Image 1 (cartoon, one colour):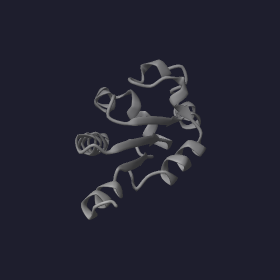
Image 2 (tube, helix red, strand yellow; image 1 turned 180 degrees about the vertical axis):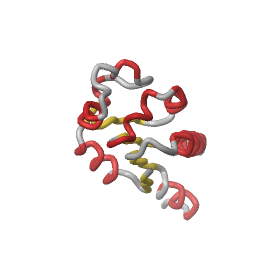
Image 3 (spheres, one colour; image 1 turned 90 degrees about the horizontal axis):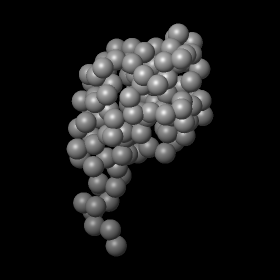
Length: 114
């Protein structure tokens, strides 16, 4: 039998964060860092103008604290094609479609949108 305290913790073990704006990277980093410190699994999906945040120096602070996926179509649409290797902590497999976004949201206990 699971104790009440343990059940409460397991209900909030994962957090999905959708980033579709090129603002608030500091909030995304701080929230991810805090959730990671509390032992939460964090998944990030960058889409729309949010992909522009992936080449900012502060983005590096997310490495190792979250699973990061980037919308490939948005990355290209925002003129970043050819700069994939500049994004710290990701490989080409991290560039995905919106199906990855839907999968991330469906599998999370909680989600936020920026």
